[in-house]
Image (cartoon, rainbow, N blue to C red; front, side):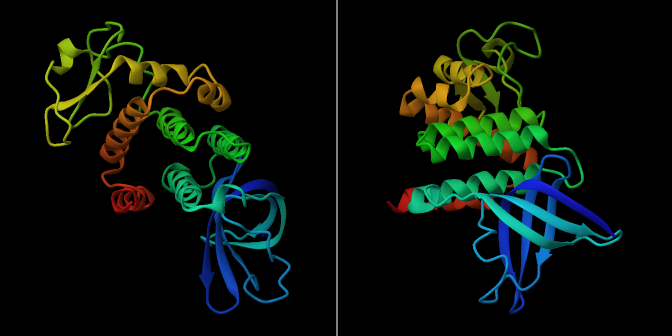
Length: 257
C-alpha cells in the first residue's frame, strides 16, 4: 500500500452509503484520482468543510494495487470557493469547469498543465474576473492543451494564414481558410459549417499570449464570446461524441430566464 500527499483540486463529491463520500480530485503529479473518505458524512468528521467541490486542498491518500478507489486519510483546505458559488451563475460555471476535467484529465498521468489551467482560472474568478470571458478562455485552452484544437494561425490544408474569417466544418475539429472550407456557412451543426469571424479568431489567438486577467481587461464584444463558445462547443462535441451534462444544464437555464 502506497501513501501519497499532494495539493489537489476537488472535482466532485458524492455520497456513499450513510457515512462516507467518494471524492474525485486532480493533482499535478498523479492526475485524476477517486477515493473514499470514510466517515465524511458524520457530524464530527475530520473531513468536515475540507472537501468542497472546486476547493484546493492538501490531500493524503493510500493506494492499493488492483483497486480503482484510493482511501483518503486526510484533507486540509487550502483555498475555499464560497465566493464563486454565491449565485446560480457561479455554481453552474464551477460545475462546467469541473466537468471538463472529469472528462479530459487522465488517471495516473502528470497533469501539471491542466492543474495550472483550472487553478489559475479559479483564482481569477475568485478575484472577480468576468465569468463569461473566463469560461471562454478556459474551454479554448482546455481543447488546446489536450491537442484537440490548435491556435488558429494557419490553414492546415494549404498553409494560408487565417488573417480574416475562417470556416469550421460541420464535422471537424480544425479551422480552415474559406477557400479550403467553402465560403458558405450555416449556424446549425447539420449545415455546411460555421463561418468564424476575425474577432473570434483574434480572441482564440490572443489567449495564447495573455493570462486570464489580461484577457478580461480587453474583453471582446458579447457576440464574439458567443461565437467562441459555439466554436469550442462544436469541437468538444465532435471529439467526445456527446455534450457535457453541465453545459446542457447551462443552456436549459439560459432558455428559462
